[in-house]
Image 1 (cartoon, rainbow, N blue to C red):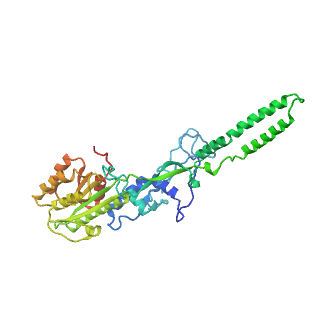
Image 2: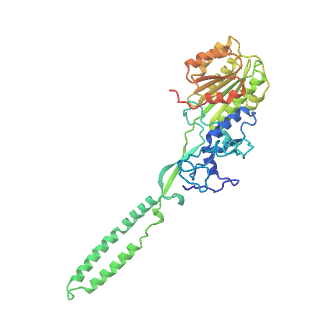
Image 3: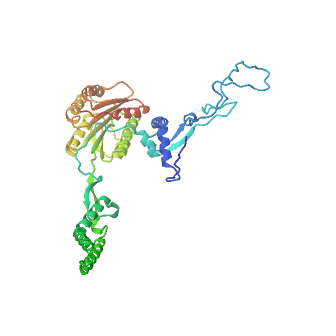
Length: 427
């Protein structure tokens, strides 16, 4: 068997081809390490690289070699203990200590360290968001498109030499040669036939003067035909490519976070982690997407990214204020015929009792008919609150509504994957 290793170097003396092949081969180990890293990291470290350890036994290459296994017949010269026909037992415990690749220390042999390597920030995020997407993303109108693709738009007479169309150019050259030389070739054939007839006559009757004229005419016609160029600049044809708008999905994600007094700092931190994870996912995977941040307590407020994650404003709890603001923003700025609309809401579920039915009504009548997907996470280690019970009725009736509970930081990433895993689009 032959091994071909591509040792061509890319930036910083690293082989990109071999590295991508290695990452693909040990995807399962890397994916597991990335999932574990997410639950342990702080918010600010979420988008950095990661150190990955792979057991030595998992990176060993299979190979053929001679071994002492199987049935063998052998006679050892000078043997005083065994005779022919005796069975020799195998050694107990295998071939020796330290060969398992576990890396554990041994008092009778040497262990083998695990293989450790570093993945970059981009590679870490690739594994982090693998197999995730905005569910039910559909293509809307192509307003404000900035991406284009080049498509063939026929053949033209002028263009870049790199885009010359050889087949069309040669076809045009052949047509030109036929057109320019057709009359001369007809006259040449006629003159050659006349000369042949004169030369076949008796020498006494041959018209020498006529023969000379025909020979001179034949020479002139051949020169004229030979002067026609095989290919001329007027024959050249070039491929024409034109920029065409490339279909791009336009999407907007609404992030609604409860910052009321019932949300303690630990709950707010978990909500921030969830939305930061969501924000990184959106910005990394979708160029044409806008994010609307809404914070709420007794009143709702549209804020920027910095204020959404780090403001310390707090108060009572009226969840419907955020839903009403989301509804109004959709009506004013994001018409459903142009945009894919998504919503993600994080709360501890604590709400005024009279307000929870209002939230369900707003979602069912005004928001869910306009959105592609809506997710709700309840950050509460205790039993579910009134808002959860109202939302359960929505989940049973609406296929593009999902809800999950987060009790501790370790639940954030699994819940995130559950909410945004790839799903078949609903009809």
